[in-house]
Each structure stands twice: as C-alpha cells, then as structure tokens.
Image (cartoon, rainbow, N blue to C red; front, side, top):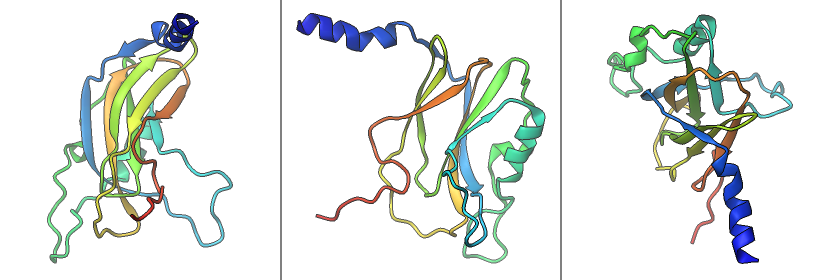
Length: 167
C-alpha cells in the first residue's frame, strides 16, 4: 500500500521535464501603485512572463535609474538590465518574480508538464530593512520559449506579505 502511495506522489514529476535557466538577473523594481480606494479586485501575481519586446520595454521601465540611497544625489543604479540587453523572444521567454521587500525571491526550478509551465520559487525569510513603500525586488531568468500557460508554485519559505508570529 505504501509503495502505491509513493508511486502516485512521484507520478506528476515523472512527466515533467526540467527546463534549464540560461541567464538570471536580480535588482530593485518599482511596484505597481493604485490610487486610494481603487485597489484591484484580485491581487496582482508576483509572476511576470515577458514574451515580446513591448512587454520587455515595459518591464525595463520599472527598474529605477538611481539606487535607493539617503545620499543626495543618489548614485546611478548598476543593474545590468538597464543597458537593455537584446533578447530573442522567438527563442526565449523572460520570467520575472517580484516581491514587496528587499529580500529577493529565488527561482528553484522551471518544469514543462503536459499542459503547463510549472515555475517553482522560494521566498527567503524577510530581513528587516528600511525601503520606500513603492520599491521592491525582482529576480528574472531567461528560459527557452515554451507556449504553455504558467503555473506559479511557491515552495516552503515565507510567502509575500505573510506575517510571522513573534516568539
């Protein structure tokens, strides 16, 4: 009986093909802001799938040109994506995870199943830090193009905006 249960648990992973992440970037990003009383009915997903040049330009415009700093003038941001490296969207897809915190999310793995692109991420434990309310962090990875809808799976760790109980 236990053998059957183990087999059933492993069955979905037997049909999934892991996709190699070819390149990755990390940095700070401007989070979407909503006017008071105009919040969306559904919370926006932290996953952004960039499939074309227009969406890529829109994503790059959210990366601040200056670092978050108390010095004036603030130093320029050294994020390599600000140089707008070319991406061939006929062959690749850019997957981006954002987090309203200064602790960056981590891509654990990307798998192709029969019907979906399963993206597994980890939110490391948040470190206390001061930040502007409209600034968060992102992690982006470049993967081969797959024409399947994405499915975000958040692995153990802390989910965004989850409160921890104090000991």
